[in-house]
Image 1 (cartoon, rainbow, N blue to C red):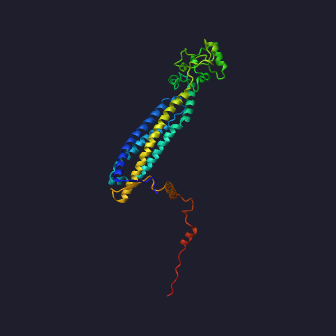
Image 2: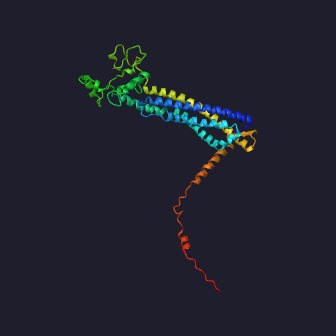
Image 3: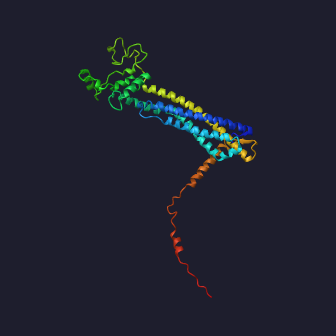
Length: 359
């Protein structure tokens, strides 16, 4: 029994073909949208690749590929639907339309996967940001080293733009040396003592770079000796709201990218639903036109459906096809399959004796 069978008159078939022709051209625009969203996300990720241990570009690359594929598939679909108004023109596409629907089905599945990947890449992005920001903070002082001289500017711009500080918070700067030895006075006994007191010989202070200072704080920025109450007037770092950015840059960037990916994921899901509806209409049009050809009357009514048989029967039929294809390519593993039998050869080589005929 056919699944979701609908009866179409000739007028209904013509209207369906015209509507699908328009929708396929709209789908070309949605393909351009997918391509643009993937390109935008890739630019946003590449723009801050210095702050990531690895570039998470699988999602934008997939959106870009799906977008380009959508343009090609829906352009072809528009041509097919336009020709389905005329039965004679439909004959040119009769053998191609079913493979086209099959390819479009897997294409819509890829769109759905792209939408789900937008929501599932958060964990990979968080790990990449954690490792990338850790290394960036470690190289903050290397302004005179080729390949790292831009890291300081990148971190300062990041902390000012997103109003964040450190990796997970401002205290992360306490555990690394972010001041280059070039700017340390080695004749100062306090500096020398601080270097000697550290096992790794690093100059660690309870201070942060200037870019960690809060822009909206009424008090002048306290960026050195943050945990020393006696070093500042009317100051208690445990009670008073510090005039530093309290949020870590990893959290700030993660929220920034999560908001972008959730918005893109929602748009891709809407596009997926639209593509599924177009694919459903094309399937109805294909089955209705094929039934018209069977009837032989272009003006007669015809039935269209999504599946000719039930879902279980269709799945069983396709499974049998795949199983039979596997049998066709099965190779016999017997090593002696092409080796002739020795006893048979001996019998063939025995000369035939002629029996004398008595006359």
